[in-house]
Image (cartoon, rainbow, N blue to C red; front, side, top):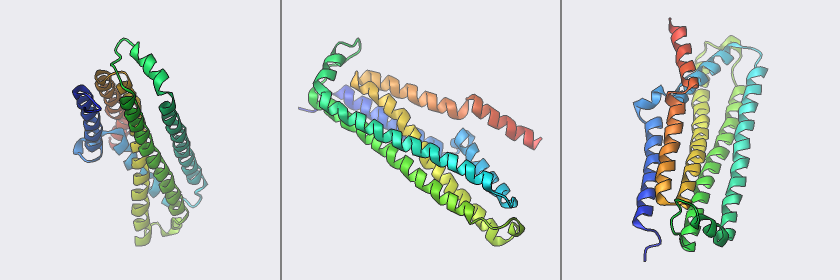
Length: 233
């Protein structure tokens, strides 16, 4: 006997496919160039180039420290979420009784519940690794900030090469942070599976619509486009 029914497998395939497809769309396709993340990548390079022209860079280091602190907060929060997910394994019977009386709740065995819980923990562990690696990369970027050539050397080949390598590492740190946040969103969508596979499909669609809207039709995106247009006029 299979541990999961056909609707469960379809919903899980839908969940994984939507997550992977959205990640590929944002990070690998030309369509992603219109997103808010891509705009931020452009401004990372602008930031580093303007920092190269400044002799006093204390403000830049303070901003970098705030980015590191934000990433550390998400990493520590993810550890708490992992602990909460593992706690669900110890309360399976009580939670199964609660789910059984929900309007859209589907019959769930203990084995299915524990497998779903382990899946949730895996998603959160993935998010933790992304946040922790992003934090480490931001540390590396801070080191490169400190190694930035003096403003008098801004036109040298070494200074321009330093801008490129710093920007690439900076962009990589932001990319891993974004992947960790995306995992958080999909972890919330994954909770729908504890009710029924159909709810999982609905919550997955809702999650991807929300994060897509924030990238392409949010007020923040409109603000960035208006700034770009104003600067080019």
